[in-house]
Image (cartoon, rainbow, N blue to C red; front, side, top):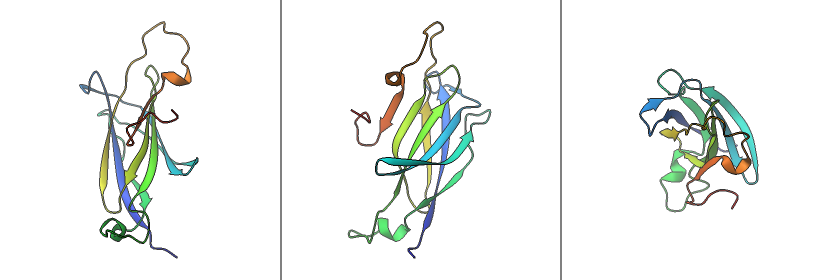
Length: 135
């Protein structure tokens, strides 16, 4: 059985250009494996806009220290951040490395009052590939 490591992530959720914390935002953490994803955790932000520190499985550290690793150097996760009154933000392909604590910053944009129903293209999506996922 292959050795498994652990990486860590915490999420800071803010609004108003980063000036104000967002309390009670729900963060759904999903593992990314090809076209499928699995929910691995759901957490909420505190009054300072920070989530708890979450431990996630990651490949062993030695894979990220070698120019020719035995396997992947990191695990990929997706973070869906949602709060009533704000547009949902999806961060795709968030890398988690063994022994490293990642801090993910999320900026929520308020929904204008009277804007009506939301459609899938209203979601804000980020990916480390520089492309909008699904396009």
